Image (tube, rainbow, N blue to C red; front, side, top):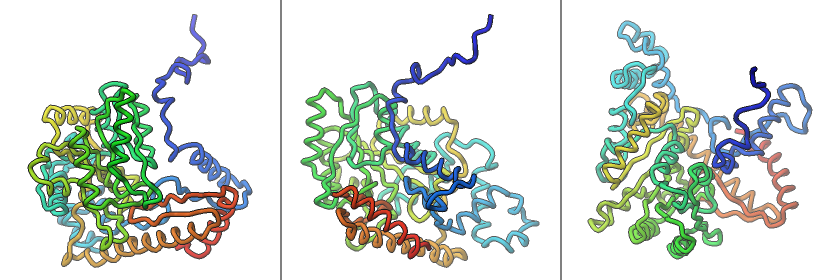
Length: 432
């Protein structure tokens, strides 16, 4: 006698409760509703609008940001490598810049077939280029054996948190407001989020007094707090930490024996570099001398942000500084479970860290496109800040970088009306 297939083996009642507990508002109910509205519109439904624009997540190319030509040229040549054969060079030169062809050839030589698995840690030549990029950025050498290419920065964050969370009492200090990747991942891992609060009245500033308060409270509650997450430049708050503040944070982690997890995916989205430049935690750490030798730091970067915005290709990396050799072995083992990061994302990481240089054929167009995107982001940031602060019942801090603002609505009804009027005006004036 067969069991009826209408009685499901797996239901919400017997599935992993940690998954049920996890929430991810960026792709939550509002985002799901927006997708349904898109489907309705495509089927001819009549609403007081003709299209839905998803602003729930940093997704630049979905909002018509143009891809960088050199990056797409190289990516397409690697995909269809027949155009790289010597007998096809004249044909290729009619469509592609010569340095794009040469770069694609170099990548194919190091990759082999784009359809084959790579090293689980990422293609060695690309990891070397990432190490070169970090060394040039920070003025200190980087070891490619301690760099892991990933499916976007999110995958790197999830993997490293897996390493840290030993049991359900492990706590990870996270900023509030925060990007919800952290709370969602900690819920799935059955770990404890330990919130510390950014001060909106001080430009979303961070003080070690607040960090100490949060840490002490976690200890009082029996939480084994092991790491501190810093998002710099801030998401969703847009602040950029000063070098002095970063030294204080490193010192705090050293005293409390915390691993520092530095989410630095917005490092090129800096709008006032003369006033508030970006410094990586790796650079600041190395400037603090031998007393901090062995300090445990993991830094994350991504192709999804900056001027690149290649979110769908899912590429990123993280660098390990000061980690135990045994832990690095385990990170490699878990990376191997997925065999390797996707090759398209790895290629885009290579192009991010090694773009065209001045004097190369593709550089003028690359510079033009890069600057146009950058200036557009600055312009739109200024418009948003001004408009939010002009709305009745709303205030908004300026942003040093990143791509988001966090306004404070004081009178909810007036704020919503203001947003509705602003949205219509914004689309009419600034559609480009």
